[in-house]
Amino acid sequence: MSDLQQPIALVTGANRGIGLEVVRQLAQQGMTVVLGSRDLTKGQAAAELLSGEGLTVLPQALDVTDAQSIQQVADWVEQEFGYLNVLVNNAGILYDTWQTASTADLTVVQEVFDTNTLGAWRMAQAFLPLIQRAEWGRIVNVSSEAGSLFSMSGMPAYSTSKAALNALTRLLAAELSGTNILVNSVCPGWVATDMGGAGGRPVEDGAASVIWAATLPATGATGGFFRDGKPLPW
Image: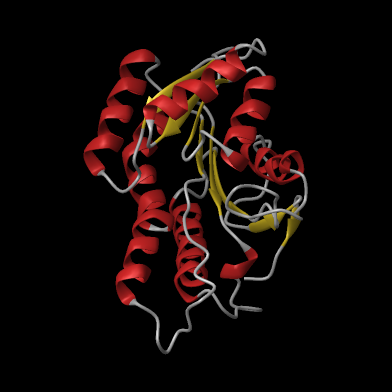
């Protein structure tokens, strides 16, 4: 692809919160952004809001726990553009604050892993061929400091799912070493969203941390874990 090729980005779990703000900020940088949302109606409403700001945002029904749903969007992106530059794996669920590791409901753990870890893995597998067609690519896994082994405590399903997501980041980065595809994990911090609750940092700041990783230069880091562009302990 030419350096003048229109950059295409895809963000999962993007009809609200951090995901929606990531879509906004990527589109403000001139990218065409595919807004993935499990509920297409909510995704369309969010995209219409951003389109009203003069941004190019295209909603698609996307459930990261459903391989068929993912493949349908991958096929659509291939037909519409033929390539993808930026994949932001933002979709995530469930702060299981009421659980402990010794008594955790493993059905809940499995559900959380299916979205937070395997969802991102499915997305990477489905879209990597399209990213490899472009001259440059960035994969950003939206993680959490709760997944840091250095300081982990509480929320067993959520924390272990994010630790596993960080491991996936390392594996993909190593596999793609030497290419112009950079893969990083980003903790946006405690952000005031529907999931995070009131009292956190502004959503614009949390999203900016993701944008930093999504727009790194070719000489940028890969295989890292960051917040606000600064490394976090694994």
